[in-house]
Image (cartoon, rainbow, N blue to C red; front, top):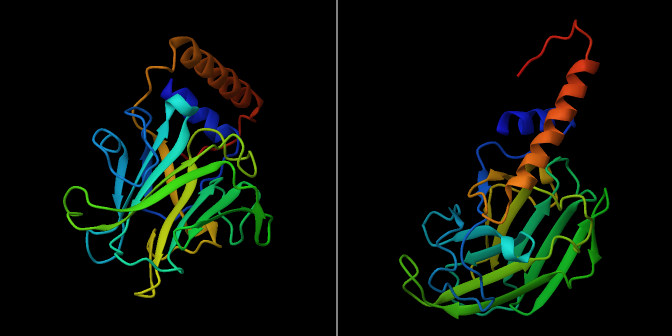
Length: 249
């Protein structure tokens, strides 16, 4: 099945343009998340946990897809910031993995400023355009939880209803482009994953590359259907290719 699905991706022309070496996996199983800006027991242990480049292990984000909520992307971001500044920023850029040097339709930027104001943007092929923000729910909080965060610090939890945010272009399965960043106004410091990424240049973002745990709710019938479609498309594509083509895998 995996082989045929891979063939399907190759034959439908999907381009994966991202910063090399910055790939994560979408985890689909585990406990529900309560949006309160706290790491509660059994909430995030089952997620993909990625430490960010700040010279310490005091900056990280967690990511998983909530199968109970239609595989809604869920994020937790821990910051070493301990101050409450009007210019502090949480930022997630997410969307189609087709790269480019400008935000495209199918790219979204989610930005929370000053621990109060949420703004959601969508690319238009030249810049970011503000769109309705009702698809994003969030909460941040000064909290204390596990090592190395045994001191009071800022933590945010974010959930995205990807069926209704901006463009529907990236609402399917991975691969999905991703950039996670935060700004501490008191230190005038941006921390991002990937470290040198720019929110306006999608080809420098990282990548949600593949699946982790296959959820139990994904029935055999659905898997079989996906496999059958992959086989049919791959078979049709191979038959249509001229015999003189040389393949490079």
